[in-house]
Image 1 (tube, rainbow, N blue to C red):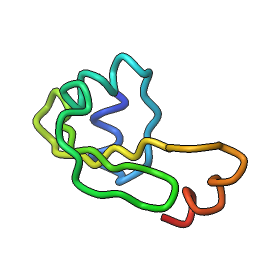
Image 2: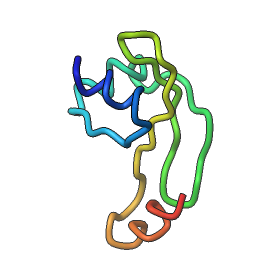
Image 3: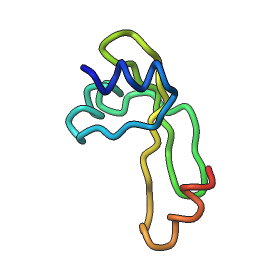
Length: 70
């Protein structure tokens, strides 16, 4: 889709629906890292581009500063 192509060309952070993230990460199959406020999963876009998907864990209000710093 256009969003995927634009992210690849520009290096911008993109937003996806939850269903798209489940597909991209193959149902959150492969953990590649953990931070104080998130877990990072391996994913692959439809065009084959590999991506890291950060999923926030815990309480949103406590972790937002940590999440954005990571």
